[in-house]
Image (cartoon, rainbow, N blue to C red; front, side, top):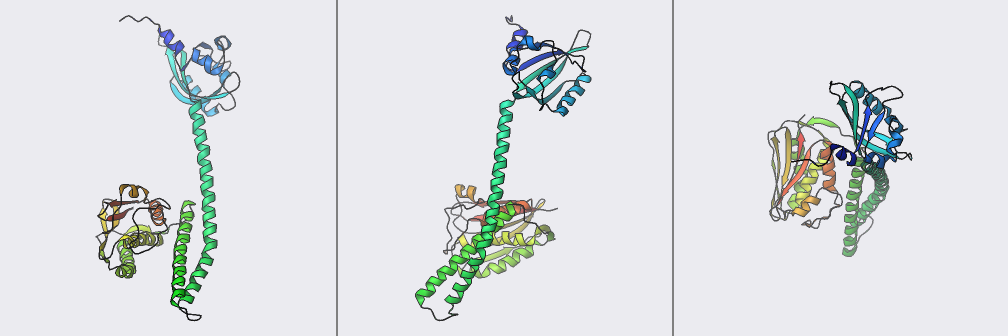
Length: 369
C-alpha cells in the first residue's frame, strides 16, 4: 500500500513536543536547536524562528531542578537515551512540567550527531497532584485537631461522669436515706446512662490516642490461650445472665508477640459483643488455632448474623447496624473500630464471616515473628 503522507508531517502535527538539537557542544553556548514542531510553539509561545540556533537552556528557569539537568547532561555525555521529568518555562514565564524522552540520532557512520527530545506536557497532572497533596495535608491537620479535641473533651468530661455515676449508685442503694421504687428506677437509669457515657468517653480517648500515634504497645511474647481463658472466665457471669453457654477451644499454638492490655480489649470486645447480640439459650465458641505463619483467634455465636451491607460497615466508627443487642444493652459504635486499629498496630488481620440468620464468627490473626 502506498503511503501518501510524509513522516515529517507526523512529527510536525503530533500532539507531543519534538525538539531536535545538535549533539555538541554540551558546554556553553550549548547544543543548538535545529528543529521544533508545532506542539512546541503552542506550549512555549516561542515561534520557530525565535529558538532555532539557540540552546534548549533558554527554556529553563529557577525551578528546573539542577539534579535533573545534571542527570540529563551525564546521559548526553555518554550518548545514551534518558527519560525523566523537568520543569521548563514558556516565553511569558509560565512554568510547565514535562515528561521528556531524549534519544540519540546517528549518521550513516554510526556517529551520534543529534539528539531528539519527545516531550509530553504534564502540567495538568502535576497541578492535580499538588492539589491532592494540599488537600491531604489539610485533612491531616483537621484530623489532628479532631483528635486533640476528642482527647481533651473526653478527659475533661470523664471526671464529672464518674461523680454522677458514683453518687447515683450511693443514692440508689440507700446510702443517704431510703428511696421509693420510682426513685430507685430513675436512679438506675441515671447509673446506666453514666456507664454508657463512661464507655463512650474511654473509647473516644482510645481512638484519639491511636490516631494521633500516642499509644505505645508493650510488645511481649505471651500465651494467647491464657488471655483467652481469663477473658472467658470474666465474661461467664454476663453469659449466664442470658443463659448463654460460653465454650473455650484452645488450640496448640506458639507464644506470640502482643501488647497485653490492648489484646485484652480486643478479646473482651469480641466475647462481649457475642454475648450482647446473642439470644438466650444459645452457644458461643471461643477458639484459637495455628494457620501458617499466624496465630488465630475467633468468637463464633448463634446470633442473628449480619447482612452484606452491615459487614461493610462493621469496623468503621459510629456505625449503626441493623442487628440490635438482645438484652437491651447499649453500644457506642466504636468498639470494633478500636479493635481494627489495635490489630493493625500489631500488623495483623481482622475480619468477620457471617450469614444473615445463621450467626457470626469474628476473628483476628497475629503474625508469628
